[in-house]
Amino acid sequence: MAIKIEAFDTRKHYRSNFSCGKDSLDNYIHKQASQDIKRRVSTVFVLIDNSDPTLNILAYYTLSAYTVEITELDQSLSKQLPRYPQLPATLLGRLAVDNTQKGKRFGELMLVDALKKAIAVSSQVASLAVIVEALDESAVNFYLKYGFQQFKQNSMKLYLPKKSIKDIF
Ligand SMILES: CC(C)(COP(=O)(O)OP(=O)(O)OC[C@H]1O[C@@H](n2cnc3c(N)ncnc32)[C@H](O)[C@@H]1OP(=O)(O)O)[C@@H](O)C(=O)NCCC(=O)NCCS
Image (cartoon, rainbow, N blue to C red):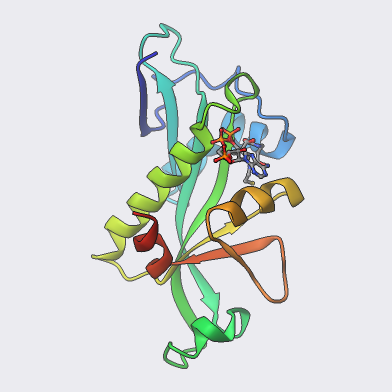
């Protein structure tokens, strides 16, 4: 295997075989991702195996700029912040691994890559945390494992403060 993470390119990467078991995430990469890239709504990064002539997508994630309401954040974080009603963040909107590739640490690899990109960009455009929206309890548990914290009013939405991201590395 010669795996690589790169920006999704519909002319190069084969998306139709991708299946992670969640229809919304499968439909997104099949039908919506290229539109979102064109309209600059999200960036989409894919994991591929360069030794696979078809260049099937093995995993993908999306990143976008985002804002969080200060009232949504845990007091331990919000008390250190200025009382602006909205604060800048980075949204890791989707993260999915193909069913044939699960359990090979590709989910972790993609998450770490997304966090690295979020940190790198935040030195130019401020962002205080990475936010994820989990589809179900299983996804929540995946993110909790990496230090994400649940929002007070919505336990399916989690955030990882920038300081915690730096601690991971
Ligand atoms: C969740 C998902 C991304 C994990 O990807 P993966 O490649 O199978 O996971 P990895 O092999 O990288 O696992 C890394 C670690 O996370 C753990 N893990 C994986 N899935 C987990 C889950 N659902 N809950 C808790 N822990 C999980 C693994 O056991 C492993 O732990 P270890 O360090 O103790 O060995 C993948 O199962 C997936 O695509 N699920 C469907 C889509 C989805 O729910 N996406 C989440 C965001 S909406």
